[in-house]
Amino acid sequence: MPVAEIITIGTELLLGETVDTNTRYIARALRDAGVDLYRSSTIGDNQERIAQIIREGMNRAEIIITTGGLGPTVDDPTREALALALDVEIEFRPELWEQIQERFRRYNRTPSDNNRRQAYIPAGAIGVENAVGTAPAFIIEIDSHAIIALPGVPREMEHLMQAKILPYLRQRFQLHGIIKSRILHTSGVGESTIDARIGDLERLTNPTVGMAAHAGQVDIRITAKADSESEANHLIQQVEQQLRQRLGKWIYGADEDTLEGVVLAALEVQELSLAVVEANLEGRLLRRLAGKSHIFAGGEIISPPPKPKTLNQAVRTVCQSHNAAICLGVLLEPGATQQTMHLVLLTPEGEQTIQHTYGGPPQMAPLWTVNLCLDHLRKLHIQSAN
Image (cartoon, rainbow, N blue to C red; front, side, top):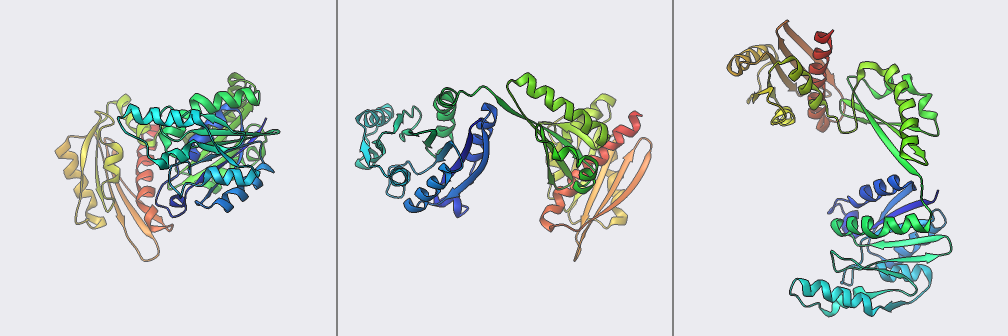
């Protein structure tokens, strides 16, 4: 199985002016094609530094994919940088120039002399027509390596990956395998507690098991390599079964499942409507719930925030006005070293008052609070279902 490396090119990426979404897209495409990706990097618009990282990459990977730097301006250096890295000249390709002109004719425009630069690629490279943009891509084959230069515009890069590059990689490297992942979502438990339960599984080599902690929830990723999707699914299912046995009701869903989606679906089954009151969360809880189910009756943002001891009265008022079976009120109270979440939950079974403290980064406290609120609603469903 070949190893790949991704290099995104652009000073605007290093300065934080543009968010790199290309790496994520290419990484997933390579994963689905069965290609191992061990490294990705970002570098600015500098010929010498790009050339250096290309040479280094060739010592680590058979497939190198670059994005960006193929535009018509002087600060688009990828063509020249790759030529420098491989010690070849750049050469004019008439067929690429004709393709560029055709793109402009389609929009009743005339290319400038700068656009002609885009028809120059390293000597010996394979030109790749860009049917949705003006920057042709190209592939350089050297021994067992394939260096692929793609434009940085996401829609152009994505089209070329699907239409041209993946078919090329499958043929060139005889790709038949697959790398498949499944993500299990947990809430109401910390990363260290989960690690204590599944540490031995995290040492597996195929499938591999890894964790990603978020504010108020932890994701567990299972990744399998196999010759077919059915075989990959079988490997994943064996490990998933063990994870579910060990973690039980901490797991609330998988892959595209969301915490709010699970909560609302459970309330729909019981035909229980929900209303919420929030303070100091800037509408985050309401936005997570609004428009997702008829079972959500609505809610209010209280400003200025109430005192913790008066939160339950605000919850009762909203509960009556929205005629909801279940009402949740939450106040995030700031503090010098930690923040405190005050939660009031009204259900047909009575009233609960809950308090949690948070000592992490203050900017993450609202998300942590919202996830804990939803987790309490989820556990309410589990308890009442039993």
